[in-house]
Amino acid sequence: SWNPSWVWTYGPQGVPRLVSQTPPVPWLPSGMQTPFDQSNPLRSMLFICIPWLSCCAAWAGLATRRSVQILLHAMALIGVLFAFVALRQHFLGSEKILGLFSTVDSRVGSEIPFWGTLINSNHGAFFLILANGLCLGLFLSGWTRDVRLLRKGGGAWLLYLGLAILCTFAVLMAQARAAIFVVALQWIGFLVICSVFMVRSFGARGTAFPAALLFLIGIVGLTFIINPNVYERQKQEWFDTFRLMENPEMEARTHMVNICKDMIADKPWLGHGGGSFRYLYFHYKKAYPEFVTEYDRWVRNPETGQMERRKITLWFQNAHVDFLEYLVEWGLLGSVFPLLALLWLMWRGLRSLRGWDTGSITILYSVGLVFLGTAIEFHLRIPLVLLATCLTLVLVSRQAELQAR
Image 1 (tube, rainbow, N blue to C red):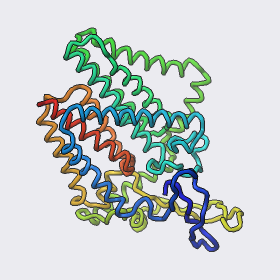
Image 2 (cartoon, helix red, strand yellow):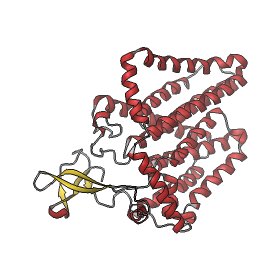
Image 3 (cartoon, rainbow, N blue to C red):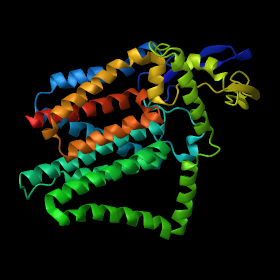
Image 4 (tube, rainbow, N blue to C red):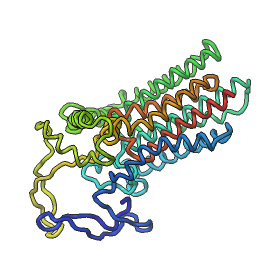
């Protein structure tokens, strides 16, 4: 379904049928886009299996600190490469390279791009938030290690600070409200952790580095205020980005939360079944008549090529709130498996308090922010983001235990 050569369309009287087309990327294998491509039960099972299997596999397969470090560095560099390619396509307008950040002008009405596992810019932005946390954590881990060993040379870990700035810039270019809010919290937490580490290691002089970072952030912010052209353009873009009043998306999300609560109340223990939300929420939507999902729009008839006025029903593929949708589909009993994996990791982490350093804490804080984002977003419905987040949590916990020994 990422590179379809066959798609479903509507013929006369709205009868669906399959038609062929040239694949978006001709040199890659092509497939067929079906009505069940995103929410079939097998795909839904992955969302439960991924946290459990990544925990078991990483804990059983990684027995040395070097092996854990290699994976952490590799995941961080993959995220940085992802950010570089995303920025390249953002500024050059080459949408088919990654299909992650479409330019602002072309975002409205554009087709879902080739990169099928990242449906919109918010999903990619949360993946980059995780990569940013890895870069910041590896930067602090390297510095902590050199201070502990009284090393005066080296300093290759400084590169990760620059790579973190690149990832942050890519997140901002996505212009996704939730991601911008989370990445701001991420930098605030990093500055707090960094300040504590610096003051403990160097005394009052340790405040110089966090202060320098704050100074640079202030200078960058000041350039937008001093330059009238940049300020007015950015003010309008960011106002549009953060505007919540009269925003249909935010209003719809509020209704979806209420619908999820009603569905959970009906079947709290076993849930409604994997992939069932998109088909069952219509019934519960009847309790909220103010939630309007039918619109009159002009659409093109594929048979005649003429524009016709039709009543279109907005069909939600998911609840847009991850942790509620897990409970809706799998119930309390079904959701107990990833919860047990999380509790087990917390127990092993508490047993290994001596193995945690400032870098590990920074990575753990970033993972927590990605999980916190599920209260307002649905990025963990994307297998790549879910796998990377869970694997990062397992790796940093495993590293702490190995270092505590």
